[in-house]
Image (cartoon, one colour):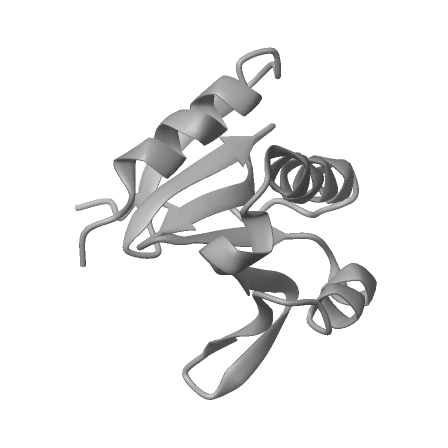
Length: 117
């Protein structure tokens, strides 16, 4: 599945002043890692935002937003946001801010050990 390049560019612009931002190909799109932790992602035409379990449950009630389900399991920190949910610049900025706000509390995934031969 292709991802929305325009949306990736919007995120790059929104995160330009953030230190320690890295892009990785993940979730069928581009993930923006902030301080070594997954923060926000473009997957197809959607945003995938890591906003924490309380905010995710609250925001899942808003238009264009739903909890992320992977392999039948709800991923409590994450929500998918369709274009309907970030139609305006103000809405887009809200999702970026929610993701950045949670990033300071989020735990980084443990580093995988490289296999030795």
